[in-house]
Image: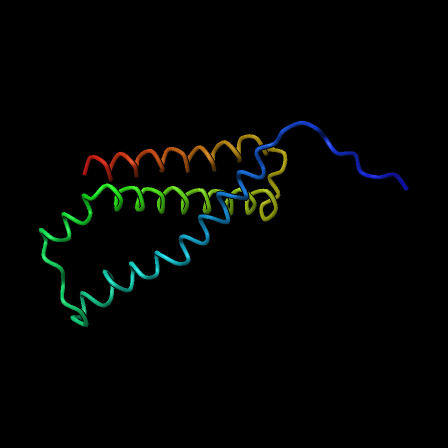
Length: 122
């Protein structure tokens, strides 16, 4: 029985798993809270809606902008990683590995740039 050979060639796989796990954790912790607040509690009147000027000033604060951009970027790369493995293993598209990887992570990168642009510009 021979041992499996390890390659010394660097790979981006650890970075993909890092983005996947960080995006999953951020999405699982922050998005439900935002949905509960802005999608349920405020519309149903459980808590008072913030004044427009106050909410606008909070959303224009640089730290808030960075956190929201980070949340969008991490969630998009988490989704890209899940979609890539779903396409590879679920639909058995291993032959199109390069195209699937480029489409998934390219879409996440384009979405991240668009989210950052909208947050900074908006």
